[in-house]
Length: 78
Image: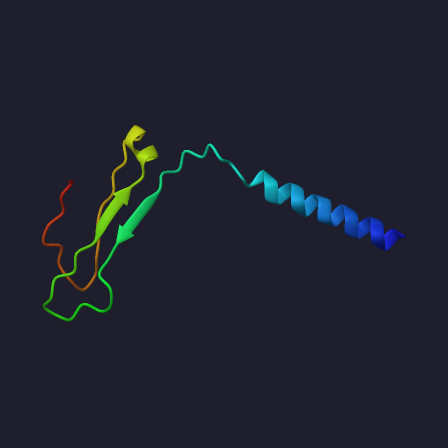
């Protein structure tokens, strides 16, 4: 009986903690980075694009592209 109560309490605490993590009104924006498929060969250009969700329109977001072992040819806002 004690084991049953212990397991039941453990399950209730675990479930309560899991539901506490859900926040449907989160202010975190959706960010989607699109990259080339496969490996870009040396000397070729790879284009990466960051797409922000609608919730990001309300925020004053900034981001900075950084790389190592290459060169950023163009960094612009569309």
